[in-house]
Image 1 (cartoon, rainbow, N blue to C red):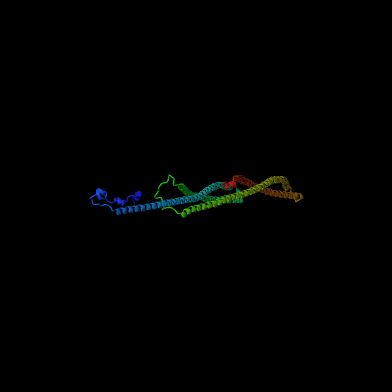
Image 2: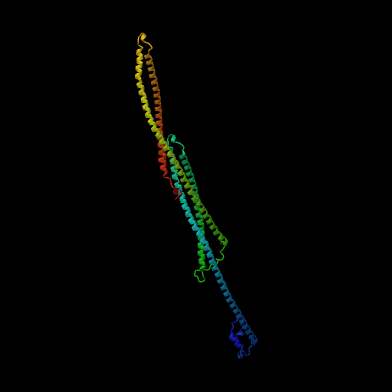
Amino acid sequence: MFSEVSAARPPLDSNYMSEPRTSEELVPSSGSAAAGLRSSGFSPADWLERNRSLLHQAAARRDAAETLRLESKSLQLKAQERTLRSQSLGTRKLGERLQEVHRRSAELRRHVEQLAAETELLLALKRRLEKALDASEIPMIISTHNLACREGREGPDRVKDRVEEELVKEVELIQSIQTLLRRTLAEVIDQIRSTREVKTTLELDWSDKTQAYSLDDQCAHYSNSSTETQFHAASAKNHEHVSDLESWAKFTQDNLALSDRAQGASAELRLLAERVLQETAGDLRAQAAAVDHALAHRCQEVREAKVQLELHLSQTLEQISAQERSIAALEQALREKEAPLRVAQSRLHYRTRRPNMELCDDDPLHSLTAEVAEIESTMEALRGRLAESRRSLDSLEEVRVALVKDIACKAHSLLIDAELCTAHRTRYPTAVVLAGY
């Protein structure tokens, strides 16, 4: 029994150590020293019971400590396993999130690049529309200049001909085209502004995702051996204003849909503007060709009329010369009849002086009377013909003057149409320039 107690040497019970000791317990009661004194110590039975109790308590607490140690080790292993498993799950979730953010960010970047390219196309289209609008001023100047020049036509040539009708149509066409180009240009400018706003929205979303990707990538690279990690006790509680996955995905999806709509509207507007530029340039060139054709036809008509007038003028001048010669001949004939008339009248006059019975109605009287009547009749006919010839000459002079004026008028009209208008229209822009290139 003694050797078992000595070998175990269990720790003393704290309750036992804390019990107050009396002077009798501290003083050993042995043999002769306690002789004659009253003994107050434990009995052997108590001593044995106390030892057994102490040994039982020590064994029970060792067992409890061993059990606790084993449970603690098991708890440590389980805690380590759960921590590693949750950390691995968190790392995997971060990786999956990184892939999702990267995919969304790549989509946003692609759309941003597409919007930037679309904006550049719209800017190029805007410059073309501005050039086309500026180029349309040249046809307007040419058309109005042609109309103003043709107002200077004189006399009967101031006619509302096909050239004037085509020029008026050209001015009206240019005005309508300029209105259409200005409206299309305003739509393109609005679309550029809208596309840039959408691009800015996507860039902000892309920037946020880039920043989030950088932060998540940094978090994914954290490990238990990382030195830059710190304790943030409240980090797991500050989640009051976070978005959920559905709203996060919908936000980006809405932005991408907005980008698709902007790109679709831009592409449709570019097709419309391209068609407007091509059709307006074609319409202007077609109308310019119609004006040129009418102008050329009119110039040909005026040239032919001028040639005819010049031919008639030449014939009229010849007729005037012939009429003048005829008048001179008639005047000469009248002058030539004066002498025979004087002779015949003198003979009759002097024969009236015959005396008495000699003044008879004889054949010479009859002959002389008939001669005077014939000469006077001839002279009267010559005077009538001379008057007619002079009136004809006056009429021919009037025709000559009218022909000369009309020829001058035709020459002036040709100067306006063939020289001024036609020469000015050679500076008419080509279809390429009118299309804004």
